[in-house]
Length: 404
Ligand SMILES: [Zn+2]
Image (cartoon, rainbow, N blue to C red; front, side, top):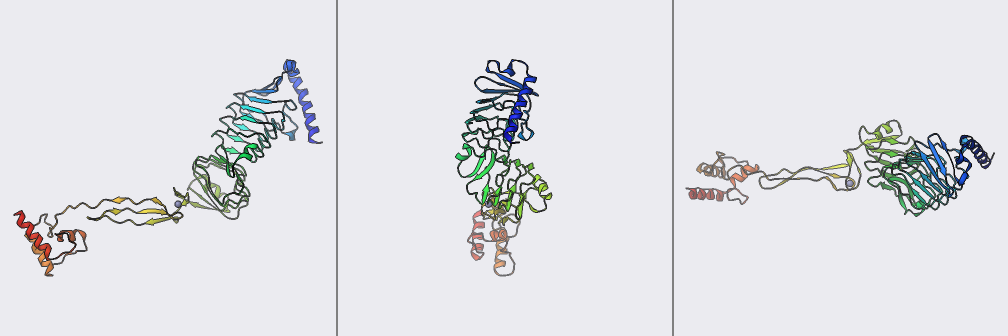
């Protein structure tokens, strides 16, 4: 039986069922208005072709496989209004509605089912729910006149080809295409190295499947990586933040050697443990300059220098091995405070004649001074010329005479 005959039969069945369920005026199309209800969902089609769907809860799916067409199938629906309270749009609910040009959706809708608006070739205007979280496969596929998709930040899960063959997709520039905050696909040549935009919430099903992308950095805050997102791609390394809490089971299928960089104890680590073909490397963060994953091996430590009495010092720093930029920049350490008396070689807290005697003994090699020690050198080099000699002894004597 061809699908069209099947459809026709199910439409007939639906009409019979409807008439049975709705013996009232609505079902008979009195005044050009028809309608009905399914579980908690109600629908009314007015004489202008405006189909209003109300009620509460989820709309059932209308899978062709089950021979269950939507009750409005075959009607010349020009506009769909989904009222507040309705939480989903059922599978294939409006699939192939050629006369449909506009859809208005209340913010109560969180899910749009598979092929819900597929091949609505004249659909030009859609207002989407601001709480939409999940758009299923082929939901708007083939909506060739649909140029705008006013997607809100709530959307995180987009399934394969949800927006395929739309004017919206056609109008996107080459490169990574985002549907709201979801990385939807790669248009044209996919770059080998991809850093997804900050604020990206999800990666769509099959987004990079079969593409030549090799390295991907996923920003913190992203929660969902779709099924087959990278399957059969050239991916060899991916950085997965701790915010990811769901990864499609075959997200990384058919890859030739993949290293996942992630945080200890994260969902990504657990996911990799369950998939023995992937190598997991624990990271401490990302380079703020080039987003390279930071591990013990990818950080170059630059030794610090201690402060002296005459020069400032520097703390230890670390550089990114990939780009060479500072990750932790060295900080200046202040000079040591001079908490001794210059010329006080004996260390008794004051400059006096005993110090002159010690210096003279040193110069006559009767007494040792460790001039490698900066403090000792500063104490003995009274005139500050960098050398310890008879001039210092003379200057000390002169200074003592002035004090007296
Ligand atoms: Zn770097």
